[in-house]
Length: 313
Image 1: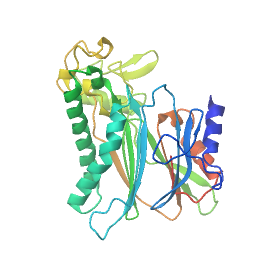
Image 2: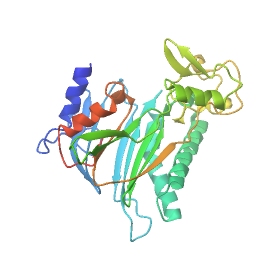
Image 3: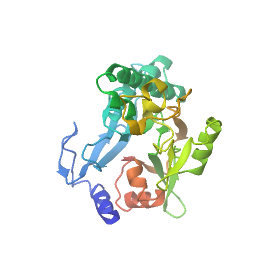
Image 4: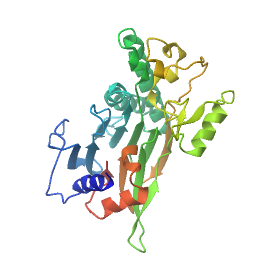
């Protein structure tokens, strides 16, 4: 499986004269087995390439690049938006994020006349509240939508600054050149929220001191309430609002005891980075990649298939 994945990934960084793109999106293109990819495309800050390995019969994930559309006033500034939405339980949440998060960010950034951590945080919260409204509306006909959620990794480049916001276990990794040696080192830019990480388990215990079973080891995997590995997400309403953790939701999602406060959070971890001349590219990917490659291995693949790109997904 690993060798197949590596071959898929190498195909995404062929020389720019070989162009392969995803047939299922507005980018146009070609589908190659389980891999959908776009070899090269233009954005305001450089080039990008994209790839999707479909792990399930139903693709639950979404990703997007928006460029030149972040103007807050007629005079600018302009920027680039990158989103990777790793859905679980169904495609509804990731599709909702794809349709609404960027628009929410534009609205709040325009109100503030600048990009900021506060605007990004408000955009996430507005997207979460919008999905809650959708669940409430659809609950009588489609109660299982309460158990659909998505990780949400976003990068925003504006005015030479890179903002990274994350919910869940997707990851953004920067490749930065070392001037003295020419090597490119991997620098992780995002914080992950997966209870397989001890510090995340400790955070969950501190947030829920009265619940000794807030995180349990089930089939050798740590899970929140024995159900889900991530501690933060968009959606997963059944673990955030107790009124949706009941029949007719499938019994496997229903907790025995009621809860008074949300078990999962939708508050993203956000970091801010001033881009430097030695910053070569950024990789945005879901855990499907990081389960097989460490940060430096992924950076080495991009570096060993050179192209003048800033962004890779």
